[in-house]
Length: 431
Ligand code: NAD
Figure 1 (cartoon, rainbow, N blue to C red):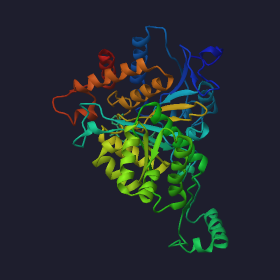
Figure 2 (cartoon, rainbow, N blue to C red; figure 1 turned 90 degrees about the horizontal axis):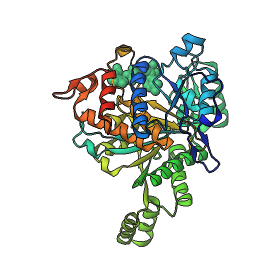
Figure 3 (cartoon, rainbow, N blue to C red; figure 1 turned 30 degrees about the vertical axis):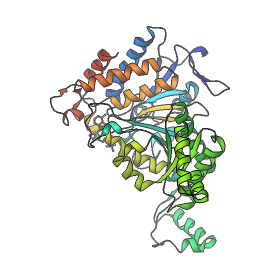
Figure 4 (tube, protein in one colour; figure 1 turned 60 degrees about the vertical axis):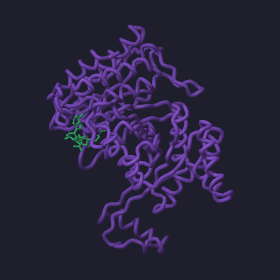
């Protein structure tokens, strides 16, 4: 579809009250992606369209608008991420993308990071849920049902790094030595140390934690866990924890009960009373806000997944946590993701795996990650009936053991199908 003469009524808009207004025939930009991107996109778009048709019988339909990024963009117009692509995502608010090749050596560091930055998509939302029948390396994968809210704009991903041996590195270290001699003295090998910076702000933390708690409330979840490494990085990760609790207690006090309050009461009034109060608060339907150190979080989310629900964390922790948890429920081939700015309404949903170039153009890979990202997108639009059809179609197909090669090699008596045939089966199994 051409972007010219698009009537305004087909644009999704964010109303003043912060609620999305979604027309029945919205224009949604998509990037098909590089490598296996076209394979998974062709399958995903058919499944998404079929779910909408089944749910609304023609009364709703997405008008897809292709925008370019990655290798296809570079080959077409000499740019990895054309300005028009960002402009389209800004104009139409909601979009979806396949995986993108990150050009190695120079230029843009990562196209995904560039898109997140351009739209200030401060939440990377990664649901981690088990679908019965999916091969899993853990004993009780059905206990896994978590949603990770990863901060997307700060932390060491800001990209402020000074390469070893560079003039900038020397200048930065000279400044550090001059103005912060005690800190400089902590560097074990100052002559050859590369340096990276880790900015973590009150604004960045509070908007992320606010989004996580609000989502937990809207979706009737039980707890939000702040995951951090505050025992070591006190003023960045530790501050994330403290600011998170501050926000929970000041903005959501009526609806949440925090571990920090509970611990304080435990000290003030004795353990038994505090325990009773905590249990009362939780049974009263309040969301429990707690915190955990990142390394033990990686252990406990595997050994006792039932203790975790919504997780809010900084960028690097979130990156590790998302893929580690995805492994419990079938890996990145089935893990969906969305990058969202809840204040501006911008959202780009995406496959969480990469371009897997050795499998490109063979129609064999698993399209579930992009299909489930489409499912997340439909829920973001409020088109829950269509989203439910995607889930039921996917669940039945996997339970019937009709799967692509990645699952097939881990399952007994399964039927091996191609990417497109997997999409056909999902469509057939809807409802
Ligand atoms: P990758 O996810 O592309 O591939 C790793 C392995 O995972 C593959 O060899 C394959 O065995 C498996 N795999 C991935 N997706 C699958 C699917 N849909 N079905 C079945 N198996 C699947 O990761 P990589 O090799 O580290 O990265 C390759 C390229 O992708 C790099 O250029 C990297 O920068 C890029 N990348 C992009 C994104 C993104 O756009 N969101 C994310 C990660 C990596």
